[in-house]
Amino acid sequence: MVIVKIAGGLGNQMQQYSVYRKLLSLGKEAKLDLSWFSPKVQEKMLAKRDFELPLFVGIPYEEASKEELDKLLAQSFMEKVKGKIRRKLGKQDSDNENVFLEKEMYHPEIFDFDNKYIDGYFACQKYYGDIMPQLRELFVFPEHSIPELQQRNMVMALKMDKENSVSVHIRRGDYLDPENFKVLGNIATEQYYNSAMKYFMDKYPDTHFYIFTSDHEYARENFKDESLYTIIDWNTGRDSVQDLMLMSHCKGNICANSTFSFWGARLNKRPDHEVIRTFTMRNNQHCEPDIMHDYWDGWILMDKDGKIV
Image 1 (cartoon, rainbow, N blue to C red):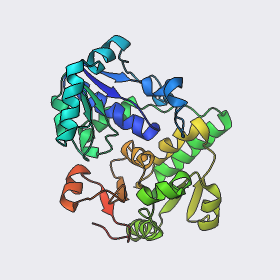
Image 2 (cartoon, rainbow, N blue to C red):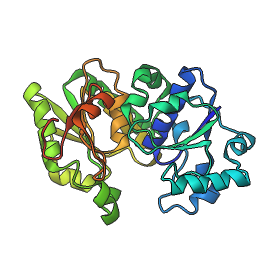
Image 3 (cartoon, rainbow, N blue to C red):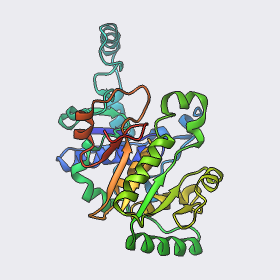
């Protein structure tokens, strides 16, 4: 059995779930560990999270039992000693040989695992790019909790379907915190967004941009031309998943360095859609163009200066 740890926000949970589905597609026995969302764990978290995968209608999954987790995670005295020796030799941090921790952008070896507990975020498109048609069918969007806003979203989705629509996701909020900014800031820059929007405008002069961000004040200040921009500001709280639904109806998707962005693009079923994402995800991440194009096949990669890589 392979057990996949589910943790983090919705975008990360969707990535971990997608690895789980890929393992199942390979004939592996796989289950999910949801213990990270227990009150005991969450009370220690600065940014508390809920298990949000059930937001998607009827999403299938099997949770690992306590006994199954204990079987993989329990350690003998000798295993703990071996773990200390491995760490001194610079090998995997975990004390337990049954635990795999994601360290690189892509680990193809996880698909050969048996009797393993895997822990990571698995953002790389190559992990599950080949099963995206299946994933698009599994991630079924719920209706908005407010009927009037559900109707508004449906009207907006139909409009997006009929035009050269492009979603623009801008992640601010927590990314502006000093510690987060060191790692995640100055990647999806103004130059990046301006160049990405110009890319679509040059191809489709009648492009209309849909702005998605939690910083609505920033959006209203910077995207005032209603003939060119529409700010999507009514899907909030648990209804924020509706933003993913709307992004998936656009002809083009301009992503922030955010897994939420990526899923708006990944769930896009339009055969003619194009996606632009930041070349890097984090400032401490070294990326080689050839490798990134392999890992993100079909995506347009753009650096912080607005140049296509």
